[in-house]
Amino acid sequence: MPDTFTEEKIETQESVDVPWNVVVHNDPVNLMSYVTMVFQRVFGYGKERAEKHMMEVHELGRSIVWTGNREPAELYVQQLHGYLLLATMEKSQ
Amino acid sequence: MYFRGDKSGGVRLSKLDPFIKQLLLSLPEEAGNTGSEAAQDRILPHPGKDVGDDFMDLWREEIQPELLHIFQSSVETVRGDLQQLDEGTKNTVKIPGDHKDAWLNALNQARLCIAANEEFNEGDMADMMNPRIDNERDLALFKVHFFGLLQELLLREGQEDGSK
Image 1 (cartoon, rainbow over the protein chains, first blue to last red):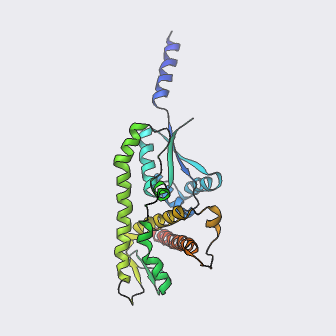
Image 2: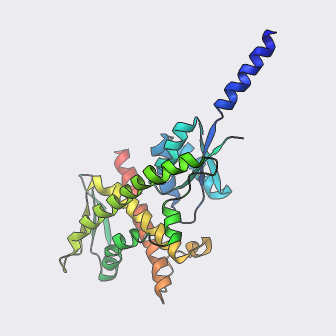
Image 3: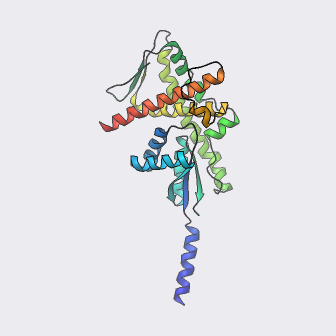
C-alpha cells in the first residue's frame, strides 16, 4: 500500500521539522524607530515590512517576526536580545 | 544643546549646559545599573518557554555572558567618549561614526534599567518631557526621555547617512 507508506513518512518529517516562531513582545520603553531599525538589521527586512511588524508589536503586544527551523530561530533571538528587545521563540501551532 | 552630524559620519553634541552635561555623564552608571532583579530580568530576558532545559543551560552558560560582554563593551565605549567632558570647562562631545551603535545600545540599556528599577509603566512613559522635576523619580523619568531623544536623533542621523 504505497499511499499509506507515503503518508506516514510525511507525518514523521513534520514532527522533526516543526517550525519555530520568533516573537517580539511589546515593552513601553523601546522606541518605535529603534525597533524598526533592529528588524531591518537582523532580518534584512525593508522599511515597510519592518514597520508593519513594529506596529503589530505596538498595537497587538506581539508580532511573529520570523518562522523557520530551530537553529536560526535561536540565533535570531540571541541577536534580538543583543539589541535589548523582548524576544522569545516558540513552536509554531 | 546642539546636535550635529559631521562629514566623517560622526556626531557632535555641543553647547551642553551643566544640567545636560550631568545627565550625559550619568549615562554609563545608569546603563550599568543592572543589579536589581527587575533590571536583570529585563536586560537578560528568558528566550522562551518551549526551549528545553539543555538549551537553557547553554543559554545561561554561554549566551548570557556573551550578551553581557556586548552590553559592557558599549558602556565602556561611551564612558571613553564622555571623558572629553572631564576637563571642567569642556561642553562638547564628539561621537565617532563607528561609536554610534555603542551609544544606541548604552542609551537603550540605561533607559531599560531605569524603567525597570523605577517600575515605570505605559502611563509614566506617555508623560513625555514633564518639565516638573520634584524628586528622584521625576529625574529618572526625565532621563529616560532625554536618553530616548538622543537615541532618536542618532537614528535619524544614521538614516540620513544611509540616504547619501
